[in-house]
Image: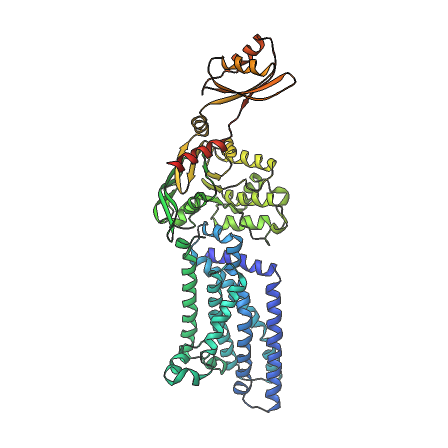
Length: 246
Length: 311
């Protein structure tokens, strides 16, 4: 457990040493802050009585978009940059397993993401002080955001292992994540037979429950399985040096 | 102890190295020579645990690099050809990270020693991205040295250094060679000659020869040559020199206002310099220059590689 933490700490320091994490954090807070404000304004305007259906649902579906925008940029450099600098090669000669390197980097990106998500709680906290509400659905939504982050980061880190170009890495992540969202966008286009099947596989459909304050074990399992799949692919991509070279 | 046993590595259909075997004992510096693309880096990467061989076995201090990778890697220090450095870290920060990653017993002390050895004391707190190429090369070396592993794999450690830093690095490697098993690759033969006990020559993925540099040089240099310049008529000088015992042939290189310069080729192992000098003075000419001509190892190396290609 020591090696992943060492990698994670180095990674966090590297992120804090450069502007990217701050820019991403600022944009994340700006967008989530704006969405929270506008969703709240709408909720007040239509005079809703049920904050779960009328407010949190919209807030989390909007936050989801911001996470989609920011996470690929957060994960793009994790392996791509090391591959480009050649530091990955050196890392491979240290007494550390690939999975520990992967775990450390995954943890680092997740920590930054969770810090961003956690800081959006300021708005709901102020609202709670002014107008107390049932906190359960809100917490379920944040739990969903955390799980969504796990899935997004896993996907992003896998994309980062296959290239030394950070833009390619980010674009691959966008491609996979956006496709898994839009795949079920138009149910008419995909036909009645495949639609239910595709809906089961759609990443974002598995987030609706959380947004509405419901924690469904199927959704939890799905998001974790999605993350596990991409972490597995990332490990395979790192192992490809055996036949591909460095 | 470094041991490569019949290493073969294929990438797809391309064979990078084939049946490469070598051994480096503790207290020995072995030079790994070959033109670019010969497979030096591939061999070193296999031994460093970057990727496994397709066939054969690599051992670091007796630990198989494939089957006991962590044990093997704990015992080695690797400096890749292009120093791999996190630009945003400080020198000491990076070395501390490396020491911890390599399970160094006392990381702090290990970092101090590596900084001292690689001559990085003055830049220890500087950010790596701001340092010159020479310093980066030395940080690469320090990364290999940190934790004092018994086995060192250095891939072209002097590439990109100025002559002074180059000499310093050679000295350091020589000194490290007294206690470590060091495999150092290079394509500059003079450098290898200066710091290695033995040379392994790799060409197109195969080992061509493995012997001490002096013997290699002796074998590759079929004869020795001496330049003789005298205040004498050219023809007469050439004739006189050709009559000296042990001289194979004499070529006139230049002549001007009563001076002549000849290149004399002497039988191998025969030092004819005294006899040549005596002959010149006995003829009543003034001896101006008597200088042995070094065959560069580059020439010899090309001859060896050429002979292999012709086969």
